[in-house]
Amino acid sequence: MTPSELNHYLQEWDNASKPKRSKILEQFINTNIGKTAPELEDIFNGGASLLFSRLTAWLRLSYMTGCYVEIQLRAILVFVGSSNGHKFLTEFIEVGGVLTLLEILGLKLIDDVDKREALKIITIIANIGRKYKELICESFGIKAVAECLARSNSIECQDACKNVLQELSVGNPKYLNQVYKALISLLRSSSPEAQQIAAQILQNVQPMVESASISIVDPVLMLLRSLHLEVQYEGFQLIKLLISYDSIKTQLLNGLVGLVKPSKADLQDQTEILSDTEVNKIPAPLPVYIQQAASAKLIGLLSKESKDIAKQCIQFDLIHNLLYAMGNNKYADSQKQAGITLHYFIQTFPQVESKVRDAMGQTFFFEYTNNAASFYLHATPIHMDILLGNKVKIK
Image (cartoon, rainbow, N blue to C red; front, side, top):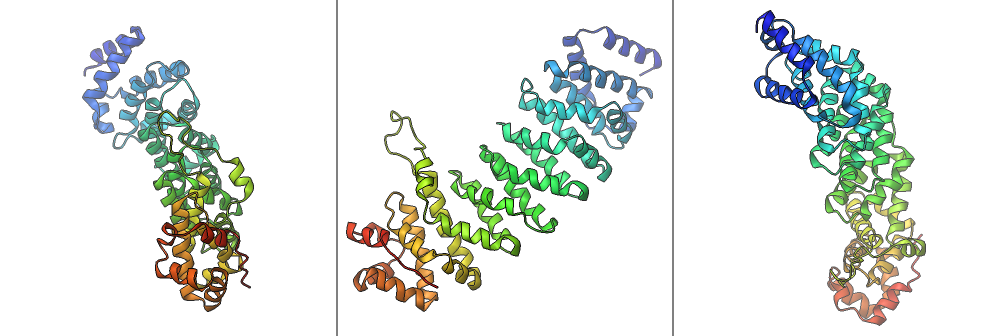
């Protein structure tokens, strides 16, 4: 492009309407995507920054309206994402580009497609180094990205949020605790995708933090209540990691044992998941019962890995709670998982076997231990009453 061609190109941009500018940018992206910064400068005869400055100015003036935001961000990405494009990144940051991107994430009128493009640029900026990660965090970037993740309904946008949070959690010691707290808050999100992503990142972030925060206990236990198996899985993995921290081990185990026998308040607060009787007249299991089954299963897994954990769980009235869960015919999986876990404790601890045998009676005990995983399929109402009314205490 000669100097006169560059001038004509820039004049065309300056005089163009918004739809015309959009077409110019579309052509620019299709022609130049993947080019290096030196190649862009060569194409524009050393004047690439003249177009770039016009583009960033238009974004700052128009992003609040939500019009043509995606095409502008994609064009900016060609510049800042180019190899050796540090010059363009610096120019973008100097004109307040970081704040603009973060504000875009918080605007309701801007859709997830636009926000995804903004997040891609934020990731590139964060990837430059610690100084730029701190700049994003100083601009309340952690909060903006976390809130964007919690509200997003797009997988692509959610993945983009994940990339930013992962980038901000590495090589950013000044703001690591802030990232950690934001991730814990996301565990309480109503979005299962946000919960899953937060739990995944926390498994990497927790070892970087000096100690586990007590504030993580309740949110991570709530993951076991999720109807989404992928969320439950990440909850399992995170709890297995957290159980090694002495600062929260007792609270975590105590919480798990307590979930095996839901409180009356928990049961009263629950509502049926499927309320549309025209679609399905069979009520779904309450989340509290799903949490009960998951807790019983996880306690069994943790106890098999560590006998010390098993001993500590017994002290928290686990055996009484497992027997109670086995008598709960509201949710078959609760009975199954409680039965399997209790069988391990019976086989491992003689005092547990003695107490459970006394509570059940010889005949029922034999029938149960003969097939612990499916005893509930053949249990009678009398058996259920025995289990629900058990008063087993082991010290």
